[in-house]
Amino acid sequence: MNRRLEVVDPELTVLEVIEKIVNKRIRSVIVRLKERDYGVITVRDIVYKCLVKGIDPEDLKAYEIASKPLVTVEKGTTVEEILAIMEKSKIGNVFVREGDKIVGSITLMDIMTGYLIGRLL
Image 1 (tube, rainbow, N blue to C red):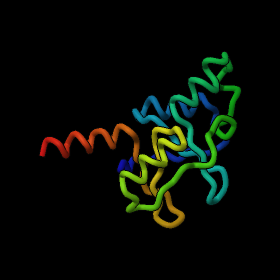
Image 2 (image 1 turned 135 degrees about the vertical axis):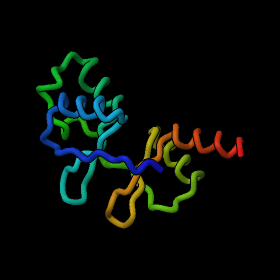
Image 3 (image 1 turned 180 degrees about the vertical axis):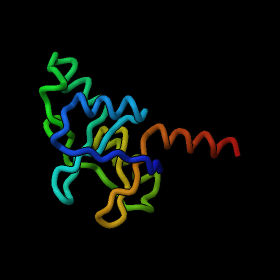
Image 4 (image 1 turned 60 degrees about the vertical axis):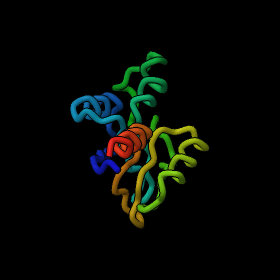
């Protein structure tokens, strides 16, 4: 599980989100929509919902392109269960929660890395 999470304000422009993603070398940000309501913006969202369409990223707010609802699993969920959720939802990452708090994320790359490390041990 990756604990490096970046939570952004829904009113940030997509350009500001791009800057955060590039500067922090991350692939997604969590958008806090309401107190316990979140969305996510991935690199893929930015490219396909904004750049490919020729929309100026300064003209869009983060909440406008955030994918909602955030797909989460409870801490302790098995890798097999997570993979089933990813396959069913056609997504490449899920967020891990402890109660109402988001504490990390798991991506397909994390799962592949874990598999490879397991084979090497």
